[in-house]
Amino acid sequence: DGRAHGGRRLALVYQHQPAPTMRSTIALCFLLGELVSLAVLLATGRVGLPQLQAAALLLPALVVGAVLSRLVHRRVNGRLLRIFVQVFAIVSGLVLLVKAF
Image (tube, one colour):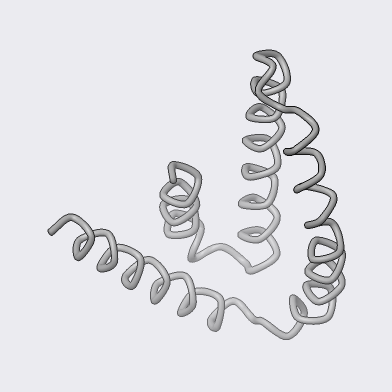
């Protein structure tokens, strides 16, 4: 998935920035990417009732995630976030290497 790869690279670039800067920058990039993707899918007629129903089923999880992120993000300092970003990048890179073989 191109978005996941871009997210890892962006997180690595911003790993030495304050945690709020890293989170907000990555969130904005993903939001813009998702909006462009949605616009293209709508313009090409690739979104129909089944996709809208699936999206509606996922809305409760979206709300729960948003509420939990409000509780957690203040507890994750820059150092902890930097470690998480580095571990995530290493593990996901290894998974891609293993899948390639």
